Length: 205
Image 1 (cartoon, rainbow, N blue to C red):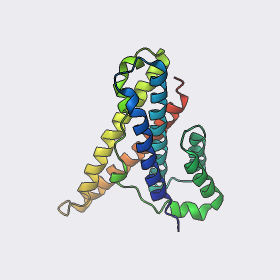
Image 2: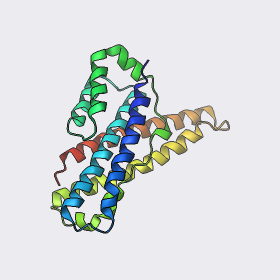
Image 3: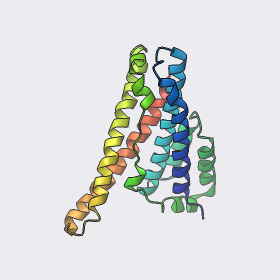
Image 4: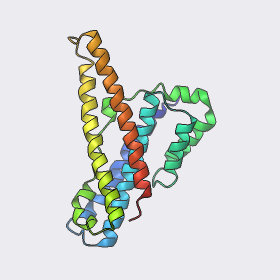
């Protein structure tokens, strides 16, 4: 039986590391090279977008909101995302497999550990160059940067809440509140991940 969530998460993590690694050397003090900055930003943003789509998928499965409409939305986001071909093929197979496969996919739960920190080191190293872009492009890039910061904070919050769920000294009613708050964090992260993906998809550097 295919563990869809673990497959997507492991594959996406490796791809993100490879893409970010390819972009990073360009940032070494050469931000004034417009072509290289554009290529570096596109590479980093593409990697972040793919990671956000993967997180959105995994969280949707955990929250049991993974349906055909959600899969089709993911499919749309992947169409113009570099490196998303294998993920897109897997989503297509999941759509073709029918409702039983969706139920299996939703049995894979999310965890705080899955909400790994997303960083944009190339973007941060090239803020002087970004300041030279047109206002709309600059606004979009700064929006992505801000959202990545929020996602990092939410990841830390999820880890803290997850840790509390294992505290045997917490009263049952308080534990219920903590678990509800954790689910709320997951919903917020899923929403922000899709927002980041759509924002990146609209950026034309």
